[in-house]
Length: 334
Image (tube, rainbow, N blue to C red):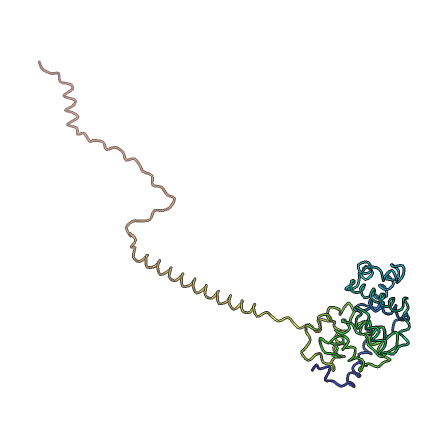
């Protein structure tokens, strides 16, 4: 069982009182004025579900202003009526619910007045409203609360997420079950104000995204009721970031780092072994080839210039010179 169901009703009542005082400090502790007839209350509940009170009032005023009367809304198409709820979530479903309410009331009374519901008992009124097609539990309970003044707590999806996070209900519980659990925890005199303040919390723009993801991160046994007030104070002081878990380093990054280190070590070892073998080969080849020591190395960039040797002259003796002279002077004898 969930932690919220294990606690006693008296403990839940004490927690709800403390939550009510904290919510009063954060938001205005006054209920907005609401004195609409039964039929308009039913139509207003279609605009109020999963939205703020101000947004619902604006949509309801547009609905009555853009159409001539309620009969025109009844006979109009869903596409024509959904333009009124364009700034709200699921405008087509809201338009369908509004039209189905008008069709049911007109077929039942042949008019657009339904204040006779106030004179019925709670059981008979609940059975009567359960016959309306496409009417949600929130719309039915909201109408009964304001038309009959019954001890009921209408809860929509957004409010249910906030109530589950506070530890008053189990995660994944239907909205109607959540409202029944709160019925025994909140006093009748405080129920309208408690619902209004929980709506302010659930539709606060600062916390809407936080409450939308509550069920994904909820513990198996639900949120602890005893620490609900403390968590609410921490939410108001530090915001949703106070409940976000620090991001863990991905294991994949660690494994990739390890693998990269191993690969780098292997590559460095392989490169070292290859360089050693290359050195050994180079030294072996150098020892085998003996360089010629007698041949000097030529200096780079210097060219040898050949010098022409003088021609050798033949030495002639003095005797030979004198003999040549005598041969030239003597005349031959006849």
